[in-house]
Image (cartoon, rainbow, N blue to C red; front, side, top):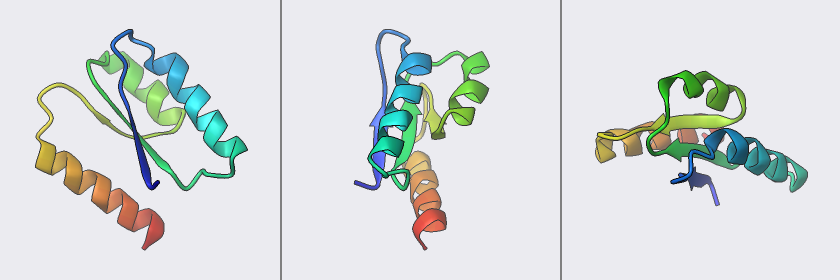
Length: 79
């Protein structure tokens, strides 16, 4: 896998993202990009970026634009 997308209906982003990133590190898979989506309070964005989110996509995200961002980040990471 190159990307994992994470979304939760229970506002668990701040709990689940650090756990996911920790497990990826334990598996020596820090190369896997994690993106987060859903209804996420703006005040949580910095926390999520600081804890391993490569991108955050909220409601109204234009899918082709999101795809371009993900592809650009993958290209930056993997050349």
